[in-house]
Image 1 (cartoon, one colour):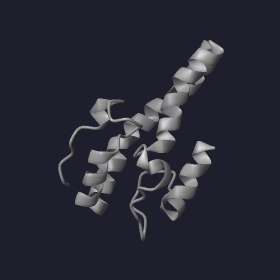
Image 2 (cartoon, one colour):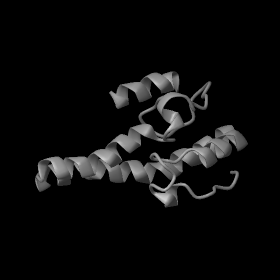
Image 3 (spheres, rainbow, N blue to C red):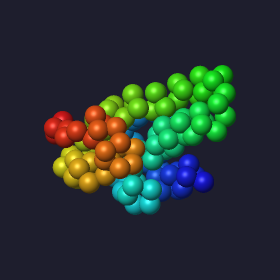
Image 4 (cartoon, rainbow, N blue to C red):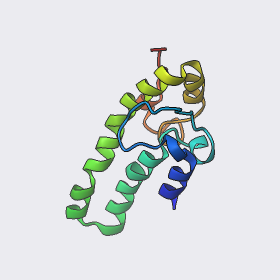
Length: 115
C-alpha cells in the first residue's frame, strides 16, 4: 500500500511527530518524487473518495479531522526541514508539490525563505 511504501522510503527518518532526528537524511526517492508529504496526501485525497464512495456523513465527519491536522502540520515540518537541509530542501520543495501536483494546495507550494 501507499502508506507502507512511504514508511519503507523514509526508513529511520520517520517520526510520529515533527522533530529533528539524529542522522536525519532528506528523502526524495520513491513516492517522495511525487509528493513532499505522501502520507498526508493519502489522508487528504482519501477524504473526497470516502465522501463519494460512502455518502455516509458520519464516517466523513469522523475522518475529516485527520486531513485537517495533516495540512496544519506541513508548515511546521517544512520549517524543520529547511533548518536541517537548507538550500537542498528548498530546491526539492521547488520541484515537488506538497500533496502531489504543484497546482494542488497552492498555498503549501509558495516559495519559502531560508530559516
